[in-house]
Length: 79
Image (cartoon, rainbow, N blue to C red):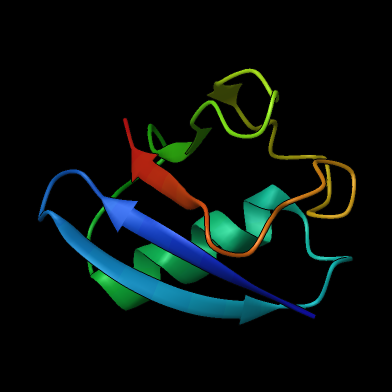
């Protein structure tokens, strides 16, 4: 499993989650919606530029392992 830090841009709140590497981004989004108490179908996870990895939206059907999610990086939960 891995710790993932998500920042909700709507509430400007950061929360740390622990997920298995096999979790899909869709499952991460669902958990974030529940914990932040906000978001809808138009929300997703955005990865910032980090250690040579380009910024971009993470596709919901891929896993955390696919994206090589790194501990210590803050990912954005927003529209």
